[in-house]
Image 1: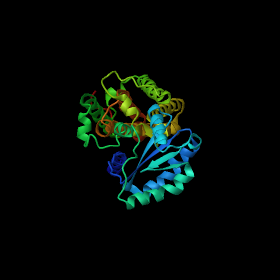
Image 2: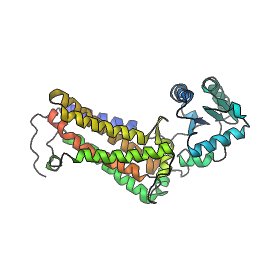
Image 3: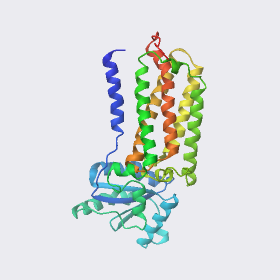
Image 4: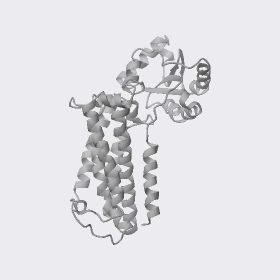
Length: 341
């Protein structure tokens, strides 16, 4: 393996982590979108209508999305409708409100939102809509600047956030270590780990992700043992990917994918097995990188930490080194022997 290829690989990993960094941006025009995850029109607004509008206005537009099927979200939705005295027969989602105006339905949002944004920009911008309880929801979701700095947010729950930083450091070490040993001799302590450890870790991770998914789908309170703020993390804007799939559901899919890759790897030989091993390693690298992103958000952006999330991140950090040996054997058909345990 050439030195230039190693540098290229390291650069790629660095670029991946950089792309996952969080930007805190100010917005001139602030709007709230109420949606139902099962509503086709809502999916059209979130996936097709809003992205080009948000690209056009950039930092000048900030939209806070609220799931009306959530208990708190439903209360905010009702409060917003009542503030406009909208008749029952005209109520529905997607419902977007901006500085005393509102739009209901995908077509009105598509056709009317740009004009509303331009009008409010011309007036010097707008604040969040005056909906009872909205400010509390914004603060929980990390949309407000209180606490003002990442350090303030870290101090808001120092014991749990300190644990998150320790896990974050472990994830970085796991990622760097796992990439390096694919080009070197496998350490004896890695080679001596029993084969059952990998599926056992996947099983534990699947249980953790399934529990988070269950609490999300049933709107149940997350049990956190009183030493962290799992519910705050669960209700934050970062608990869903693209506003559609929860982090718990994404974790379930990830652990299932790794388990399937393990089964296929053990059932195949030759080139097919090599490809599956590389894919499994690549997905584990992605899993740890994504865990780094999520774990960074908790103490420094959300200002709260979820022990269940940290457990899942820790498991991914343990899983990744166990995927390296087959990849190393593919890269180095005759790898050197490790000098020590």
